[in-house]
Image (cartoon, rainbow, N blue to C red):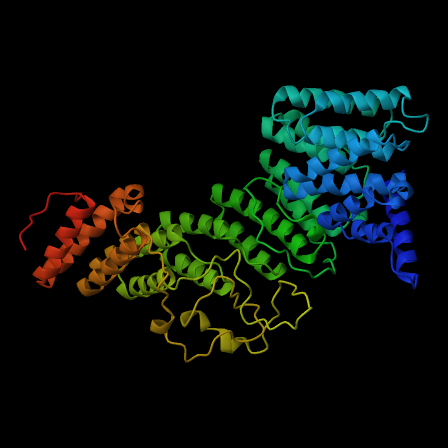
Amino acid sequence: MPVCAINARLQQSFQYSTNSPATPTLRQTLSKALLQNKPQQVWTLFRRIMHSPEWHRLTEDEITHIIRVFNNQFIFEHTEDALNRASIIIKLCNDREVKVATTAFYNECIRMNVYMNKRDAAYKIKEDMDAGVYGVDVRSDIYTYTSIFSDTNAKTSEDLAQLVEFYDEMLSRGIEPTELAKKPLIKLARNVGEHRLLKALLESPEAEKLTTLHAATAARMLSNRAQAFIAEYDVDGAKSQLEQLLMYHIPKDTRAVPFSPGYSVGSADIKIPLEFTRTREAFFIYTRSLYESIMRIYIIRRRANDAHELLDDMRRTIYLPPTRMAYNWFIRFHAKRKNIQKLHEMHDMMLQDGVMPDEYAYTKFITSCMYHPNPSRLQKLVDTATRRAYFGAKDEEHEPNVGLDEPEGVHSSGLPDVPRHITELANIHNIVYHPQACTRFYKSMFLEHEADIDDLRSEKCQPNAHIINSVMCAYTMLEKPVLVLREFQRFVRYQHRLSPHQRPPDLMKSIIPVAHIFKMALDAARVINNQWMARKILAQMDVWGVRLPNPISKEA
């Protein structure tokens, strides 16, 4: 039975539960959880039903949908517990001799075995389906082959050859491939470098119109196709997928994804909880990954103007800021060319978008500006980097949105509103900084203008050796030895707090930067003729076993 028909039956069952004046039964509550894609709630209700009389009332469609929810949870959340739960349900059905005679059920069994790397078991189920073991109505269809193709453990050319045999068998039976069926084959062909097969899959006619799919689902499909075009060095083809995606209506579900998803470059696989895969924010996350994949290719090909146009278009189109990784691509590109003006523009963009520059970004900023004839720019960057390093801001992946006063019980969309008085927020990032403070979209000011920077320093700050090294080097070039010693003292205090009775482990990870830190501190102490500070620095070097990068006289 098609998936849409199963969902229709579940919807009908759910309507009965909402229209009934009596307390809903466990089955009716389970139907509601299935429709809302809540795996944890589905599992809790199923365990209760297992030991109740309602077990015998479960239909084939409900059992199939339960297994499908856990298979989908594994795909979206990459959790092994989902597969374990699906296998428990199938084993329970076998132990209690539950008779199931639907193709959809055995398709989900194939998916589960394929995900668990039990290919022989999956192929045996398909053979039994073709042989009529499960009944005359159970036959292989497009979803059967899609389940076989979705082998997450397929990595090699041999695995691809085996899947291609099933693909040819599917075509010989007159079954037209869909984008969902071709998606894993395109991904595997791209990974193993089978460019002829990849080109054939991309050029084959689309039997399924993507306009019939949900926006977030289409985003995953088009992102996968775009990655394949990028593997073929066809940037225009990838951009055409992006243009097609932008024609979709933005989803109406405004629930916020509970954590910040991560993804690797060149991959359309993004870890998002199953319950939130059709939300507005999930759609923007998929769209952002596609934007950034194309931008990366533009930068690699030194087409900086095209990359910047795409970045500006992305900031106008979607309500999520670019990732720090994407900004670092631009920073590295312009730092190599000592393009100071562009680096300042990127720095301001990051602050406006609420994207916290990391040690890599600030190191590139500072080292690129050291040789600029205007020292004021370097001074401004150093001061900004110092504030960012010592604010002690929380982890941006878990920091709640600041300034959004939502009433209790109301879900935040995760997408801040456009402020009414944007001019009031224009320079707010010069006063205070929060990782999630996207000044382009916040609806109200998140701190008073009277906030004092010195009052916002946290005792839990974690000075990084690389950032401290860059900042001290910049202060040295600006001929400000007092500020050099200030940064040195902060670094030493933090290391003492981290490991009060032994040599800090961070020193072993950053031997060269730490040596330069001590050398610059010694030079600064001698410039201001502070012999007491110089002796203190040398004593600390002996305690920690730090060796200077160049021989230096110990006169002080």
